[in-house]
Image (cartoon, rainbow, N blue to C red; front, top):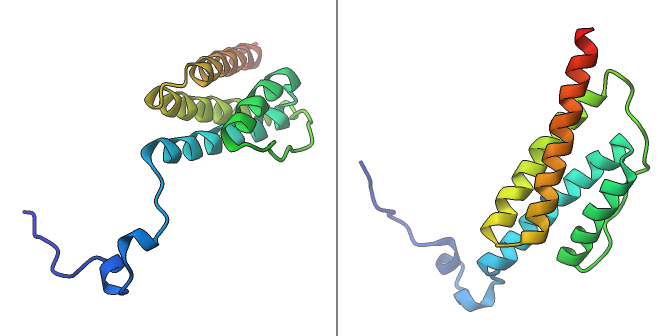
Length: 132
């Protein structure tokens, strides 16, 4: 059963006025969240060595943050490391797609859906190659 709070909010207990604290709008919070998901996706994409895809993601991170993202050195995973990275990238793209849809960012939603498809296809091909 629900029991109401018995103490005042921390903001009110510190003696400050609520307007003295920084607040972000829902849109700003979604922008920050989306940029975070895309930055994580960019890091995994760089690690997979997918330069063209990474460039598209970096453009969107720059648009959202107003600054270019820090990039990891591009490489390529070994045969054993590709599947977990593709799975991680797929999951990150799915998170980005959800946030992009909630903020009605069609460009990022399309990018995220394309990345999900690409990583799902890569996982399928890795599964097929491992089955032989």
